[in-house]
Image 1 (cartoon, one colour):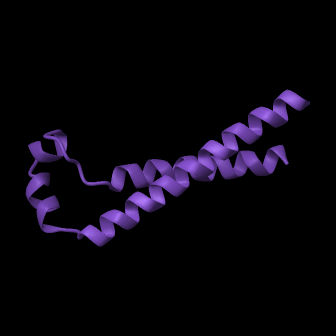
Image 2 (cartoon, rainbow, N blue to C red; image 1 turned 180 degrees about the vertical axis):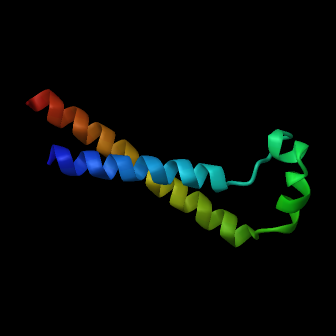
Length: 77
């Protein structure tokens, strides 16, 4: 069970990294410095953003459940 949760945790962690990087930047960071703000304002729709938000939340919940589960399993053993 520990190995299964560890594998799910690794997959959820990588998925979280990818999903967070796919979000459109709202501030004036490096993406707007290199012209990313013009591109980001022309691409994407609100439906895509909402679905990306939902996927990110789901991946975060899976990640948190795996962390709690692994903590309980390690404490029990």
